[in-house]
Image (cartoon, rainbow, N blue to C red; front, side, top):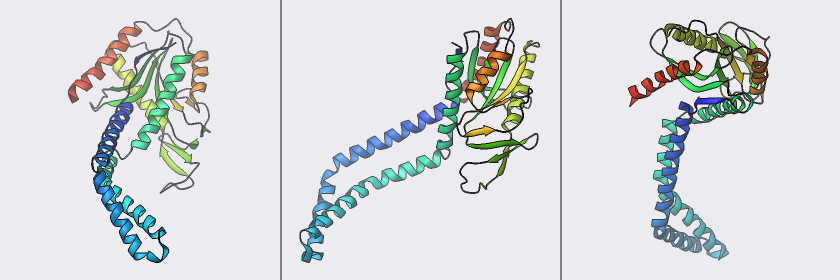
Length: 279
């Protein structure tokens, strides 16, 4: 079983924080409904009385209808401020659905790697490394294998993908929504992964690890995503995590990388420095 040196990710942290805030609002709303039951009962009686007077000719249906409307009015009045809090929370996390989707894709890759690769492999999830311009770039997964290091870009998105240019892919989504037409062009995940690999290669070289090979990889994790391009050895694209595992078991043959633990610990120091800078 492959060893995971860093399991959590920024995506996971965002989802956990969002869910925590949702639970806080929901608990406060439930408590408020319990404490203010008398207000709901009052609106029920007022509604029942109004229904009886207005719809006296169909008594007792008018009474029951009025009571039901009164109940809804009473409950909604109490819920109103909490709905506003939820609305503001959604504004705070506008991309939470996409974040959940991305997290699911990353977790799928992690699960396949840990279950199907031996302990010769070391995995780092969601690592931000410094770049040549000093801004930093985030890599979904860095997998240390027997003969190479894989810089893995994970995409959890549906549709059919075709190569278009060095920096763009042609995308035919399964379901078109909003401004997405029958076909559109998206930034190439392969180009992104190659950039990550270049920066990782540069960083390792600066630390004296000049012989380590870094291979960029793209893994499409959604069952409804298909890559229609040719296999490119410089940056392989896989339509599912299993295909990547099969490729790795066949291609990653070697005596093993030297000082892997030392190299991994050195990379993790950059993550610690990043977290300390935001503390």
